[in-house]
Length: 169
Image 1 (tube, one colour):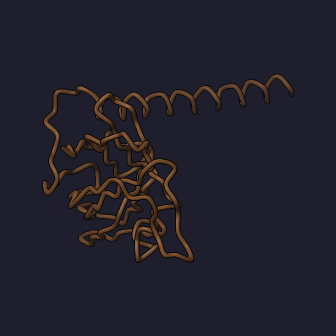
Image 2 (cartoon, rainbow, N blue to C red):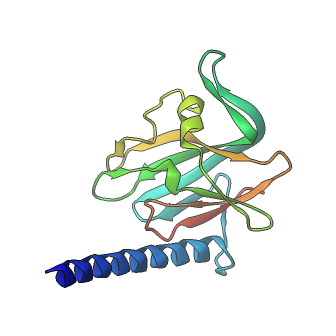
């Protein structure tokens, strides 16, 4: 009985590792030199069920929120305003944590979800399902070192999608 349980746990772990490894390679290939031309600020770019339009990028922000409630950057906040439209046939949740930003040297930065709560006036902007045909606009926040300039984003309709690259400069 113990051998069967151990084998089942080992098989499950290997399957999970295999799924995760494939997703990581796909995301890295998308953000890297895949040969595809990146969209620019103001261009509509599609990944899966979502059409993304990056409206603006503002770095050098030290704090988001109010004087009473807010978040202070470790380095600087880069605030990326994005419109997300559901172009699919089913509702889909936009997850800010699946979005990545990159510096010119290829360093990857994750979104700061807690700072995004303070940067968005409507805290539920990215945490609710978006129904087909509907769209939301909100701010994705990245906390990066003071001397870093973000050059591109990799935007995803889910953590498992290939993503689409949007150039910031």
